[in-house]
Image (cartoon, rainbow, N blue to C red; front, side, top):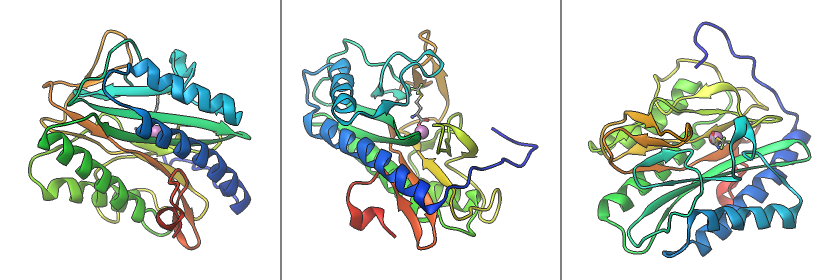
Length: 263
Ligand code: MF3
Ligand code: CO
């Protein structure tokens, strides 16, 4: 977090935002393939392999591989794992919930997005959790317009989650600015007070990524120093998109469907 100083936020030209759209589409296409292909019986390493093949095909560079030593191109976080799960030989089972987070660089510009995938017949709770997380993300994305503040964005996200009095909002991890690096200023919390915090300006780009839990919001990091789990062992979901603040409103750069992505 960046309390006590005013974050210096990278401002992109319209041409640079177009370049981020190219990276965003690579990320969106890759996650779409992963959503279509991920079934029970696959391992989380199989998901990483889909992304690696797509990086090879497109010539894009992975954002995550070697980032502070991270060993894969995607994060796969299963059930009680919140974020930053490392792909391994774990075999996905019917009823699992897995979030897949992926970032790529094209021509120096980053895209970052995550989806939660429900494997086969999942519990009503898992369905509702993924759904509320996705709706909360979209509420945040819609609030990402010039003149609004990060408090407005966080409030929009939290309002969706808190409308149903059954979920926790993870506070230990937040969204972020993005551009020529994956993680830049500002921090983008999934909660906030309307009118508070940094005012969004044209040319800013942020990744909005609510992490929502079925129980308490507290988290812990496993011994692998990466995997974040809920402290109480309950389910967590994670959805993420990269959005640019443009003249005509939010442009969701990692959303493939133009009618949803474009203001
Ligand atoms: N994409 C994640 C985020 O949304 C970060 C992944 S951490 C890494 O912030 F090490 F895997 F890169
Ligand atoms: Co991110």
